[in-house]
Length: 213
Length: 213
DNA sequence: TAGATTGTTAATCGATTAACAATC
DNA sequence: TAGATTGTTAATCGATTAACAATC
Figure 1: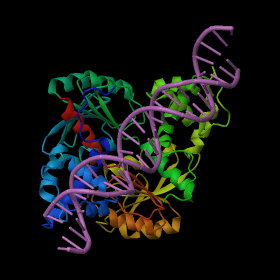
Figure 2: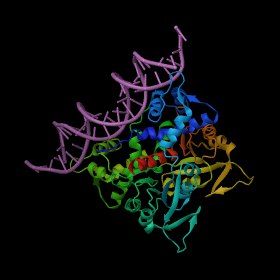
Figure 3: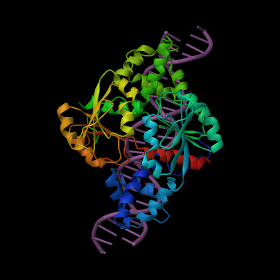
Figure 4: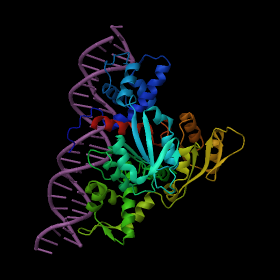
């Protein structure tokens, strides 16, 4: 029941975009003006038709046979599509290594991610700070998100009841959740959960080992 | 050209397994002996036929109509398939927050991951340690992997030339690579790369925001 | 028995890839 | 011109889902 889904770009295409952006930036730095689909396909081990279709989803000028596509235009349109020109505020749950890795990730900062608060068990009464971000008590999630109009929540610690935290985020108006726990989260259909399940990824690594050793 | 691919379980199914394991463990703790596909499907928002097929890929006893499947057996077979009873040694590239998050991740430890060495630029001559793991100079990757017979490599820092590091890992006999950088890695076909590209994931979150705000 | 649940075959669905005419 | 490259339509492919008879 996917009503009113106007997305022209599939989620798969969307996740290929950052790879294109990376290559296009290199080309722009090297003063390369145009690029062909087969060339990009070769660099990223993709099918050239797929690259052409992905490009078609963002370009304003059609590609020229024998020449290719305009690097600058593709790059700009992709960065826009990916929201790199916008600032997105988020809250993070957790204050451990993983949370700190995300908070201090320069790539994500460069993409516009601004983490405005962290949440954790309040072990002592003194509110601590990490990387200049206040670490608040978990029970303040909903209120803060609502008050500050935040729409992205990052669950970066498996030490909590993920579903409970998730429910609070949703109650606070969060609609995009980045879930680093191994829990499956149940959410209303208007909320998007992007799972980053390390245990599932690890399964892929070990399965390959088992088959090839 | 997928020759000699004896894998009965698809990569998608494989990544669903940890979610099943989690539910089955809860059931086992609650002394639940059997479970039906529709029940698991309900808990994890999956299709019941899919669950049945995933179970069929691991079970030794067929399910009984009206009763379901044996929790203990499913759990044991899945844990075995996922390699949870094996220890897997790995090296990690990086010694920052992300590397430390992975090194100190109790879930991964519980699954058998043993990180035996970290690599980083050797800024000072004193070899440092993080979480009891020696941080070595990058140029020692190949030798150490080869000598210690390591087959998993984790690239947990975007500050390096990912492809160069990757080539060294492959040269050292690594066949499973967990790539947390945003770079696309080119590897021989016998090497499996599992990408954990935060910038691509972030694109999914912001895209959902753009469409729903 | 009735009905919940199974296993399996067939249908659907969506993404990727191939084919090919158009064009610079 | 010849040929590399484009855009698009059709074919393929693989995973998910539906349908349904079998069974406890």
